[in-house]
Image 1 (cartoon, one colour):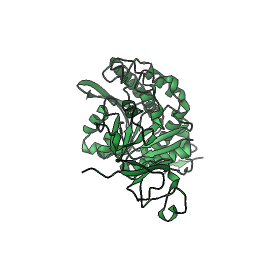
Image 2 (spheres, one colour):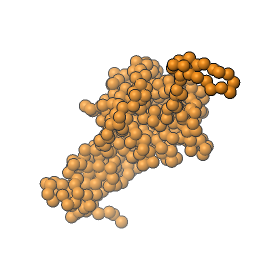
Image 3 (cartoon, helix red, strand yellow):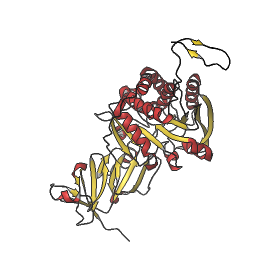
Image 4 (cartoon, one colour):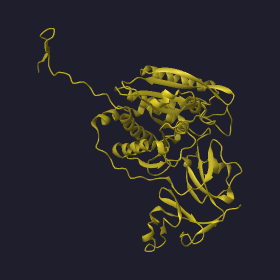
Length: 423
């Protein structure tokens, strides 16, 4: 049975007001009358005729939510004019519904009344001197060196020999930092590839994962075409190595596990197979998963980061937002609609995970092509995102308190006697 058409408007979120105030504000929309989906500073309001949508409403057979990587949906369907374009998220008329509902680069679903993209105003916490000291250990030059090296390879396609070269480079870096490493064989389609895992043991029973995908892709050119993948995702892979380097300078209650996945670009093969292979007891140990994917392209005037998770990881999102407000100048957006990166398989398995990604990523038209090069990276933005990530990780890992040491010499009275500390 066909559904009734809807009336809709796109308005500033500030114009969505409580019912008792709607009549006093020109153009205001009462929350209890119309359905509302918030996309940061803009909201879509819709309903049947007479539902309080307000003047100037348009008609559509229904409204759909599109979530996309980059501009993948818009590139595939250039004739579709969105009702609202919020970069990673689009609202389209049901009249423009494609025959397919999803692929690994975009997804279409019914628009529901909820917050899709939030613009929280987190309150900065008191600066922790220990965390400030840890942030001072970040080395932008070291990070840039790793990004540059990864992006210098002709491709990091999951089936290529240069992907293996990238794995070898990253493994050498992890070993030099004191991580125990192993490679996990995976299949990407019908061909072999691998994940790289580095582990550093803490003093407690939990583990925190820091992840990124190492592979790159040229969608138009195929497996052998140039795919430097500077932003997508040399920026995230090098970020994992830099965070691993800084965290290795301290002692933590919980284990640190660094993972670089293969097969993300073809459909999250590496992370799906990693999660599927986890024994129940190991899943239970995971306190948090921090995934880095595209953190170095500034796509808007204000340096912005999107924190994407799910309701089960909302605490991690809040921690990152507070860290951003305390230790960086980043504008923060949040979403609890996870899609198309390596945090998703963890969330599907009930493991709290969060993605950190540059804001307005659909404005980055260079990814998945030969044009994703160093020329388009913004190093200060990447550094700010790494600062935010480091501060949050320090809280999740929990530092081991240093034992007090005497200020002077120790004079021992002998067996079964109390030592005297002379200062």
